[in-house]
Picture 1: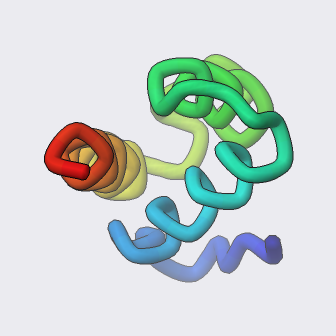
Picture 2: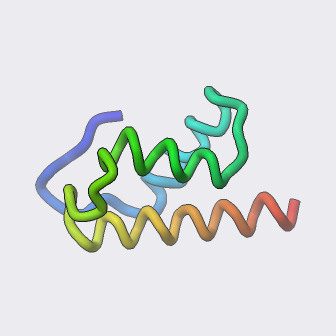
Length: 70
């Protein structure tokens, strides 16, 4: 996925990204969160700015709740 450095990425972007990781790696949502943090953010939550990281966390929470609700 292409990253636009012009502004903060949205929650929907990270929902799609996390779903891609889930499907490709056949892992749990927690593992997908860790993989995304390692690969996308390169273990630096400030690399794309505070708002982008906040949207990532919101996406994780949203997707996590959806998967639990089933």
